[in-house]
Length: 242
Image 1 (cartoon, helix red, strand yellow):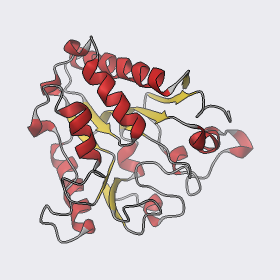
Image 2 (cartoon, rainbow, N blue to C red):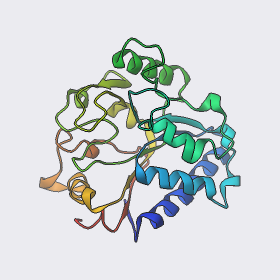
Image 3 (cartoon, rainbow, N blue to C red):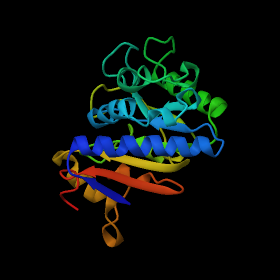
Image 4 (cartoon, rainbow, N blue to C red):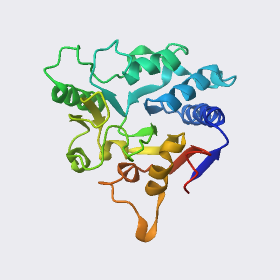
């Protein structure tokens, strides 16, 4: 499913409204919704729009479990951290229960290296996760990468881990932790959030069908799908090659 908005701001407002609706619906069904957040410019806009939504009161934010699809392996106070961005734009603006916000270990958290941090995050999700995400939100890079799963990287073929270390990332910083395809695909819904002309070619390749269907090794974004629904939220620029 593809939903195109006229601008990045319109996209942010549209997704924010959908987030509130989805979380409120999950809670009405008696579930504690489990959400995986993403980082990036459009994600920050969406987070701010959620926090400012006039309907935010429909959700009991203290009963939402928050995880991250990937994270940069840098110190906890580094501006590159997705978690820091999420705290500033969303998590500190609404009454989330900090015990339910599960951040990927930072490089100064005492783990031996990025591999140990990834293993720790995988254990945390196994021990404290619900077994599946209600919602996974993901950005897409110009090269088609998703979370920190990059074209041609060996992490694309890992099927026996929840989280993996990434070194030598083509996009700085070089060390990251990412959920794997099997973990990301344990989701009721997956939403791709994409803005900008620079992402248009990657979007078109990821959404291609038939003989043009993308290989996930070339376009990792093509490898993530929600069990119930997959939605591509695009602005007009990101949709321009469709």
